[in-house]
Image (cartoon, rainbow, N blue to C red; front, side):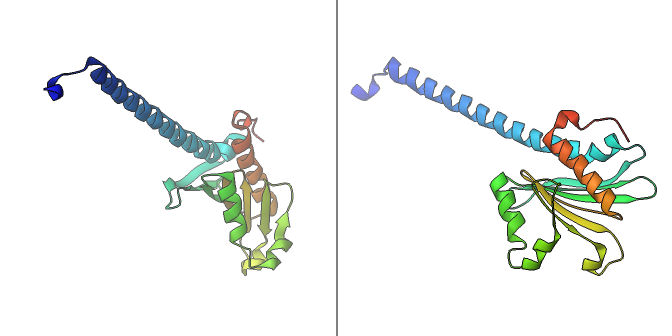
Length: 182
């Protein structure tokens, strides 16, 4: 007979618990959706960084952002001004710590890599001239800024460095990425 008695307090507690779970799930969904939107807008700012800063540049090809198995996101962009091309492969790691670890891991067994370290681009950067890769083609630049790891190439050292700075500006100060064109 005791099992048949319905306690209004228990029903209220169950409803409150159910409502709390719904509110919590809604909050978590909003956080996830906001984070996805923030990372996608990061890629959008990067994608438009060169055309916004220099007249004549157009986005020719993009791929991504695609989520990788480690949770990072990756996108590729190709820009062209009719004469030159610049390409970038952008990886947005889940954290600065993960980006630092990945950046260091890829060359930890190659001490000669330190000879290609350069200052003034992002948090750390390597510039590889064409001859290193047995190419007569582009300069290759690999740099990290915060959670972002970027691989770029262009025909000239000046061009790849200048475009890298545009990307860094779009990552660091989104409101200043639309500075006047050159």
